[in-house]
Amino acid sequence: PGDIWTANCHKCTCTAAKAVDCKPKECPSAPTCKTGERLVKFKANDTCCEIGYCEPRTCLFNNTEYEIGASFDDPSNPCVSYSCHSSGVIAAVQDCPKQSWCAEEDRVYDSNKCCYTCNTNCRSSLVNVTVKYSGCQKRLEMAKCVGECKNTVKYNYRIFQLTNSCLCCQEDKYEFREVFLDCPNGSTMPYRYRHTTACACLDMCHQSASSTVS
Image 1 (cartoon, rainbow, N blue to C red):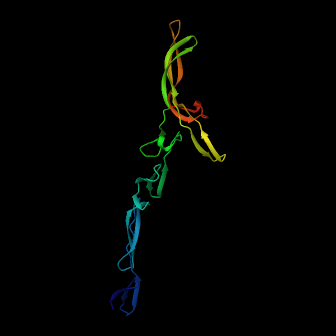
Image 2: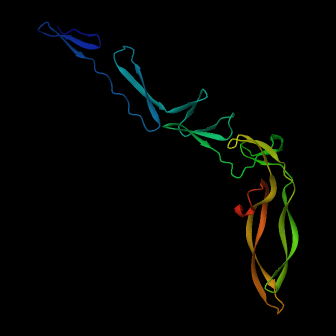
Image 3: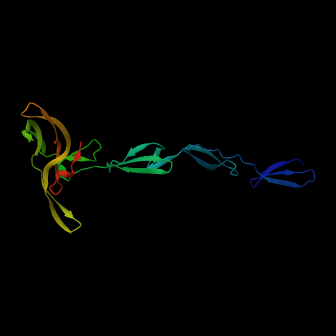
């Protein structure tokens, strides 16, 4: 009587009545992990109790582990950036607004090697213009778009054939400016006009009315 031993993950005792009293072995409670951590379970040395510990959650991407909150890129796809969250990897695609197609040798990429501008001689050029309105006038310096754009050929999936893209050097951005016109009686008249601030090689079907104000 009084002997204690462990068998099949049970703690057994020999009672005074010379009977065996066995109860399941008590195991320590698993730790409670904080947000951003995960519980890793494993068997203790005696293989009876499953215990565990907390470790930071990670995201596995291209055989590399990243901690929660980390941001990373994929060199093979510079237009997509990734971030590691508790729910997994979240991808964000970089937008390249108003990007016109041009041959690879004419592309000038940004620092991320994703978006590009086309290296053409399309540019704005200042010209002097005399504006006349209601008998008043003023000599203004305005901008016009000059230069040539390279035309390209691409496949049109809508009509199932190759089509030529007719690119023209057109106004891409503009702003409104205000001046005062000089009148014959010595007075002045306020006058508001549209001034081109940027030019780009655009599809000739897209008129300057669709330009954006800078």
